Image 1 (cartoon, rainbow, N blue to C red):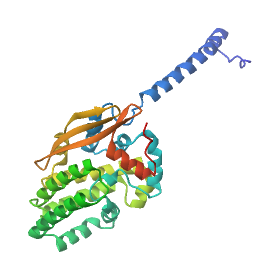
Image 2 (spheres, rainbow, N blue to C red; image 1 turned 180 degrees about the horizontal axis):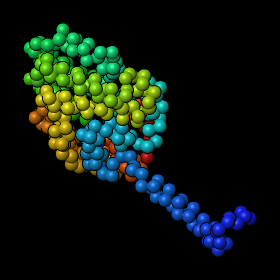
Image 3 (cartoon, rainbow, N blue to C red; image 1 turned 30 degrees about the vertical axis):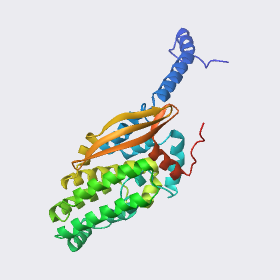
Image 4 (cartoon, one colour; image 1 turned 120 degrees about the vertical axis):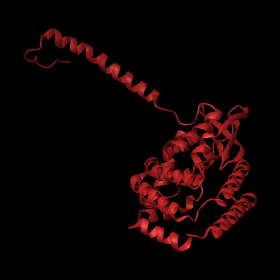
Length: 302
């Protein structure tokens, strides 16, 4: 190995010192890179209870991308992103109510003169129709509960949990001022602005962005939706803040967590199955849905 010619004004001893320090500097840089990799946050949760409270905290913060990151094991995330980009899934949005209507909602909120068009639709179909809307909310709730009890691809835990959710939401909707024009105008304006701020104007744009970027783009709309529901008496942040999770049982890598909270002032008491993979805990139903969305099969039983 040869050294470069001596630079003017640089003593030979200093150049030798620099040459000797170079391997040390490279080694230190490598160590820092390793520390950075090790310090990167792991997906999932450290305990069974945290598997529930962590996802709740992400919803409270309106961080849909973080929810996806911690609801699925690391090996599934690339497959989920590929399925998302191909249009085969919109997990974890599929976990949310009325997720199938998302493409039409994005299109309506991003259309030219969206506020005016949506308000005209509201005035024509819903303004002043308080009795009709309350009756429809109650009927829809009853239908949804019947569907949960008799069909659908739900686990027993999901059926027990979602039945309580629907009953509470139906009771709220039956008393909420859903036909109030002033609230509707404020809600439409807020949602249109949030959709614009997120930069996701269509389902095609959502797919092109990829799962993490797409979910990040939807977060302003999700947060605005929460705030507007609070204006109608359904404070979801208050619901998330009320969550109390305790360990019900644990056997090896499987556990059950009891989850109590208030939805629209009505108590909900559910048990959630969680499971451990590579030392981290995940909600079993969300993980099963993620595997299905990714087209992956469940790992073989040991």
